[in-house]
Length: 480
Image 1 (cartoon, rainbow, N blue to C red):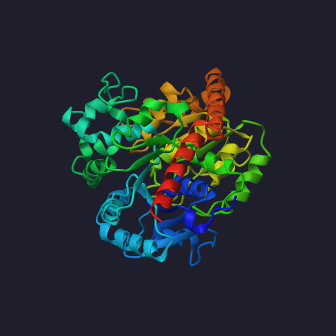
Image 2: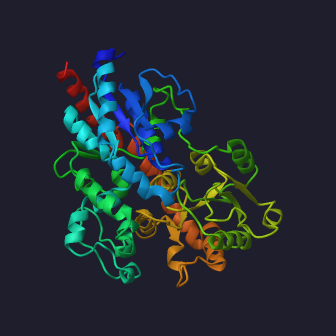
Image 3: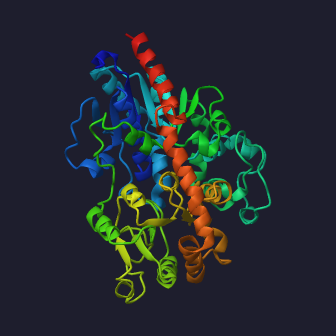
């Protein structure tokens, strides 16, 4: 039955201006649109321009708007500027409120604001406008629980994390509700002692206070992966729900929303080259290698990885962003492209979901960003973890120790933290050719089935979305 326009809840959706955060919230917004919401997707101007150029797509009940008064640091796309980005965003409460007031007045009236967990600038705005603030965690629940309990971790002496504790896997952190014991290295890398004077340390502590003041919490995970206790731990004073994997939930809508082709990539994808090459490879024979949109690598690590992949004898598709290598764009060993030409291909950016879904792909060497981790789990692809920063160390350990779908390179690094070519070669061979890899693949297949069941009608995440949608519809009707 067609929903009358005035009966549709209207959600303003506010992502953090970073690739992975935009992707996850776009998927969630599309799910809500398919369930009958008006959506206003609100970006900072630079992000909007990189996504759409001059003209955003015109879609029914789904519009794109810009917070025109927020100016990001020049060239703010990499990890080396993330502190500056957060500092700018923290001060943008007035600009955000101005934008939300305009959207609210233009109509239809807003029902709620769905905000990335690190867009604290929405808090004062939603409070002043008396709008419910829905906090969207684009991380796993365990990481979100740790972040939300930052004050507790500081009080108990776990933050800042001392350098010697990072290397001590025997010290357990048992004070966090609803999740397994953590080790110090699991905590966000911004909380390490060497970063205690860093902008991100201060910002993360300040953000944790605001993150506990939401009216509703949704998490991009599923209960069968992390358990209901971890989700409940995020909802001390408000409802909390697992609604993931959000990209699968979006696909489950079966075309109910016409915007599935919306471009969210801030990079130019080399789709045709990737898929055409994969089409010519045997099933489960290719290792996909990608470190996401923010990670930076040294020339030394690029060379070691190149040598390790070459020595493994394995076919591979390797994403090397134009800004991936710190300080040197010619980091590959001399003659490398010629030597690997028959079994390796390098691209600047890839359509990751299509790559992971391709039958030729049998493994993923990843930085363990949460999008990459949950996408790999959902596609049944086992992983080799090479975490870079933030909560990625926790994702890597959980994939290895709890979910049993991955290996890790972090534990194989030398005393200086360098992952050497011979260890990379061993890990690739183990995952793609060894007995251990076969076992990981079986476990990944089971979790893939669980993820798909969670988003089907009657599944845990689908039921949770139903509850959320019904609540917002009731709010919309009550306000009329």
